[in-house]
Amino acid sequence: METNELNYFESYEDIEIHELMLRDSPRNEAYRKAIVANKDYIQNKIVLDVGSGTGILSVLCAQAGASKVYAVEASNYAAVTKEVAAENKFEDIIEVINKRIEDTELPEKVDIIVSEWMGFYLLHEGMLDSVIYARDQFLKPDGCLFPQVAKIYAAPCSMPSMFEFWDNVHGISMQSVGKISRLFKSLKPEICVINSDDVLCDPKLVRSFDLKTIQIKDLNDIQLIDIAVASKEGTYQGFCLWFDVEFPNFVNKTESPIILSTSPNDQPTHWKQSVVILPQEIEVEEGTPIAFEVKLTRCEDNIRRYNIEFALLDPNEIEHPMGCDCFMTKCIVAKVFVQNQSENTEIST
Ligand code: SAH
Image 1 (cartoon, rainbow, N blue to C red):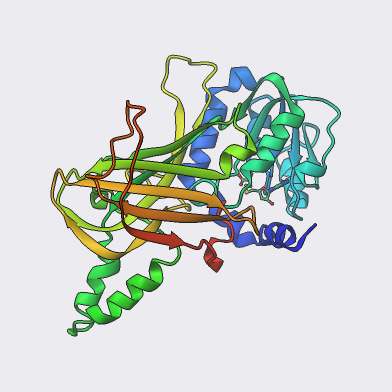
Image 2: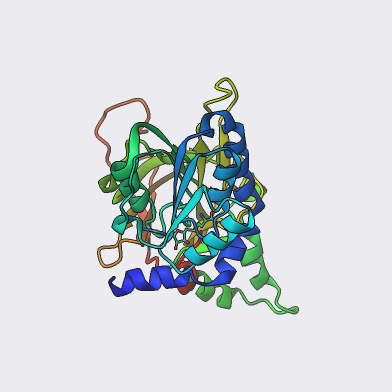
């Protein structure tokens, strides 16, 4: 394995990362609910858990009645999956394979692929590539994925807790230091929880992925040019990205899908939100159009990372892209190019 890959799997040998995920109750609850809701469908089915970690998803599927679960885990945590399977009396159902999925051979095709592959702003870590590989290699044509749909959203936001601090540091105005801090923070995405009141516009859908059909090349360049309209007055300080994933619902087709959301409107998860900080803040009124371009481009030297490029556009210079195929011109007002290279963003799921 090349060094980037070794570092990636070694970072998953840290108990704190697994503990963080296991203590993330919106995450676990969404998977649990989706698996329990589909119990009748999962009964006697063959499941592949891509990246089983501590084995939580494998055990949930075994509890739901799967006849066989292949739990594939590249890191040394495969041994833990095995112990957890035995601890829950599923050692006969869960077969643990300590390999990268890309190096795995299975004796049969599977009905269901379950995986928790999501990273910050959905795509960080690039683990979706491995799920796509697993789908193409091992999923029966009529098989399904848990989750099956993933969506990236974006919205302008303010970040008062980050910037108001500089107005009064023990009675001293420190806005000059705040400016330096803002410039520094605009160089990499900030992973933080954004208060729902601080989201300035209705969210824009950046991209929706159907995991049944998506190809790896579709993940290399993602771009949205759009105009959001401020739904309240506020200080536009950052551009917030988050995601949700949807699980299939085979049993109660009329019910709305079970969603794991990392939106500022929902209970915070360990993914929080990813925010591109603007180098300068802008005051907006209710109704102010906020035109922007956001681009996520996969890094050439490390496919597990993305560069996030964000441009403020002049709303008068772009035609609204919705519902027309007219040619779009854009006038860039300011541009932030975020190198997604901070240590704390190595892994997130
Ligand atoms: N399913 C567990 C762990 C999710 S974290 C849970 O929900 O808690 C993702 C896991 O996938 C990590 O343990 C990581 O080591 C593993 N992983 C990532 N890419 C993989 C690959 N290509 N093959 C096998 N395991 C992989």
